[in-house]
Length: 165
Image (cartoon, rainbow, N blue to C red; front, side):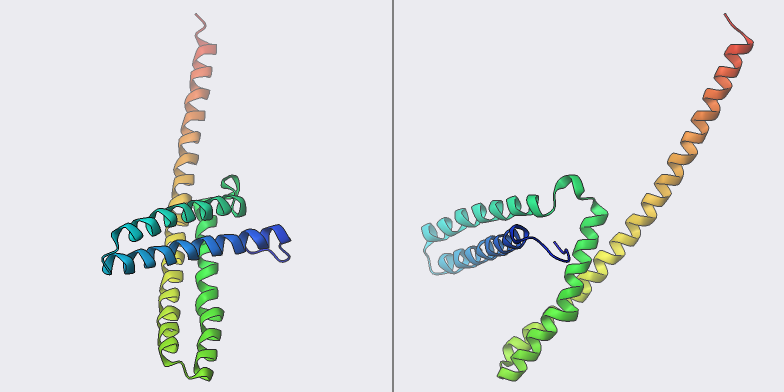
């Protein structure tokens, strides 16, 4: 959620969301490693906990992005903003620091993420543009339908006043 001066509670919810999201992915990864090592029960424990972590993250999202304030268009705008931030600011900064440290594997990873985040942002933008065109077309159809209904109603009223029963 991006506001100019988010409250401490909003900042805490964002941090909690990030933590729960990371725990979810980390536990899925640990489950994969445990399963590969033949530790099926441990893998299942990690997976069950990961399922709980994602529900916690969704709870935080419900507070950060209340359903009453969200539309598909707004969700796309937020996604575009996030992906654009990733490829224009976040990953380039991380990449620069990795170069300074000589961590070539991290540089390669960041380069990949920059490219993928740009593609994600472009996909979301394209989806938003298509949706906007569809909504505009639907609005026009609705307007035409309302016009036809009003004309029909007007004709019916006119006919009923000419021919009272």
